[in-house]
Length: 420
Image (cartoon, rainbow, N blue to C red; front, side):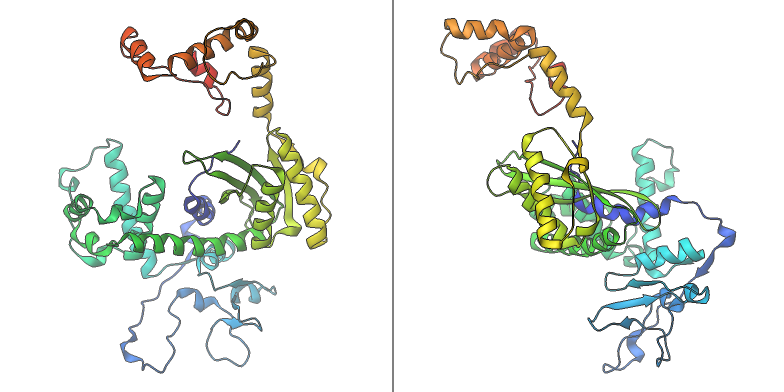
């Protein structure tokens, strides 16, 4: 099944996916604009639009300057003037930011929009590039081995805090990690300005993560709703180390700029058992929230019977709630890796006997079960017996010159091979 990765990293992949194409610099129109100071404006005046994308926004009839078009629902829209000049209409929801608009101008009209934020981000990326080169043992000039910059303008606070949020999620750090004096000393030594920009409270980190999720979540919603293809869903469920029943699922689709995209969109605790009904409700909750009832495509799942129940329930809910006919049979794809794993396990072990709850000495029935499980089953029983108590494990470690046993796991493929 699919692996569940950091959602924020997966959501941000939409923005980076469009950067894979190559552009000829000679064909690009670079649009830059210095941000005007707001000190000259009075408090009663609205703040003027400073993003360069407004230079390419079509002026609404009756207005003298390019501003967002507001519909009856209060939604703000950016209308593309270059598209209008070519006798076609194109508009984007501006409520979630201008990144989609920037990509549209670059892709469709070869207009590269840049401003102060982009310049600061480039400075940060260059600095990250130096770190990457250092970690890969590339030769750096001795003068660049340690570069301390005390100027606050060299860092963008928003970018720094976003990077720290990614670091927190990727390393599963507690929110209060940012409060640790040793960590603050480490950051202060590298760059004193960074210490001033980073949050000082775990609550602030939590709020930053929630804000980042909400912000990127709106972007993901628009990407799914504007997808050129159906939205194909790959669900997976498991029990976490702290005994929480969790379901997560990845979606795959073709973006409006014809790019293939794969995103982890939901990791949710399941209430009750991992039943098909509970899993279907979690998926329907996602479908309702993202408004993609008419775009649901294929489900890639393993061969568990609760998966059959789940897709049947999703089919019923789509028809009753959204009047969308969805045939579950052809849309239920089976993971080929799981099929192979089942076949190999059946070949190695055969039909499994009832599980032995505890070790009480070898009865006749248990000896017979031991014999019917074959060599692999016997190896499993030996490993379980040794790892049953700390004393047995210590004895085995002493006899094996420090080597440790690795126990097999039914839900982790190839664990029997690694166990041997």
